[in-house]
Image (cartoon, rainbow, N blue to C red):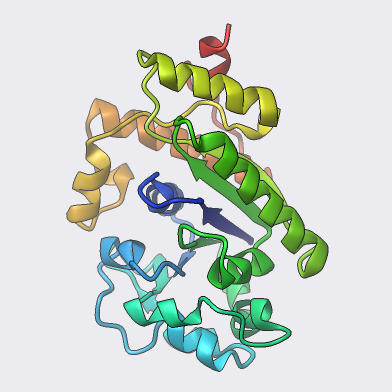
Length: 269
């Protein structure tokens, strides 16, 4: 069982897309997966067709008794292999520090819950506030999502610094595993420049290959369907990258798929 926190420094870069892509790759393999939505916008919850839950992550953080998160778990609209602890707008009130162990409330509330799953994916809000601190204090691995824009270096650097702070303070087992570059266009010179700068600063942390723009992603989210259930050239390419990313994140329990032909290194030479 691995707990993965997916984070970014600004909204709209595709953080939830990557979180749902990992869940879709796990769904395609029949893995039991729990998605924890810590973003008050609740986009992951809506994409998984959970919009009217009795309990949410806001309730979980408010209570924070050991194991109480189990009461908030519901099945997703995909099927019963993908469970969700959904978010709601009132989660915004949980963004401030509420005590000495405020960043440990999610970890305490989950207790032994993650052991029932092969994978737990936490969709963080697009900031480094208390919700993200709770996610990182709970996770084994952190995946940073960014776009190949002018601000990507600064945002990725801030996110990695936050991971290190939490690793030093509350979660020594936490590791930054990958920076995923989303909506990459190899014909865009600005994208190529920023990708090179990211790779120069962060080396192998920049996940290879980057994710292209894919129209099937919003379409599958609107249809409440896993990306892997769609059959188009664009969706297949993105699904393959998500499969490889999942292999990269999880311990080697199975044969690892070969990397796609598209490679960051190809754009940097």
